[in-house]
Amino acid sequence: MSRGSACSSSGGGNVGRLTPVPDRERPLEYEPTVFCKCKKKATRWISWSEVNSGRRYLACMNRQDEGCSFWDWYDGESTPFLKQLFNDLRDTVYSSREGIKELRSALIDAKVQMESSVARHKEKMEAMRKQKDVGNANLVAKINILKKERCVLEQVQ
Image (tube, rainbow, N blue to C red; front, side):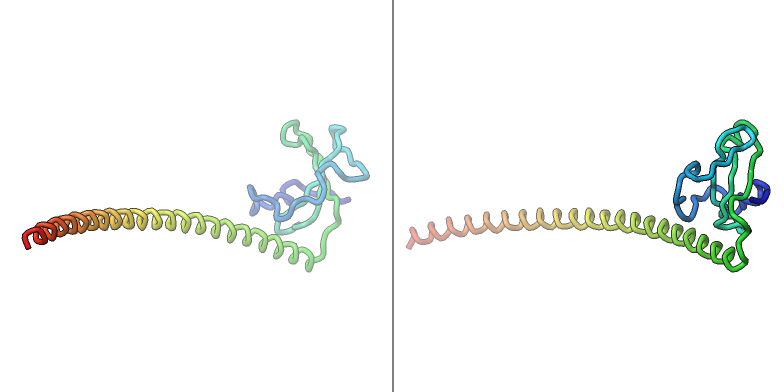
């Protein structure tokens, strides 16, 4: 294993982003065990920086809290081809996630617009139904008047 610096593994460009792929094993599920300077099992992580994308490294699990500076590469350096391949795959995953996020947002917006449109159409239909009910009631009233007039006319004849 070769020594490295914590700065080269963090990348900077991917700070705050989720890893592009889930770890295949948990940070402490590896053998043989490597202990850090504070005598705890070092955690194994995957770098997603531009320079070391996909390369695994070991670091103290408490390096930020207790100040242990243990850090070491687990994997040797990759070939330029593999570095570029990992970077391209990582960028594709990030781009796909952004696309999915945008599509979900557009879907939510479309659903809101559709529900609003349905509500407006229901209101219009209800108003039209009420108009028809009033019109029907007026026609029924006129029919009843005409029936009475016919009865009166039949009695007169």
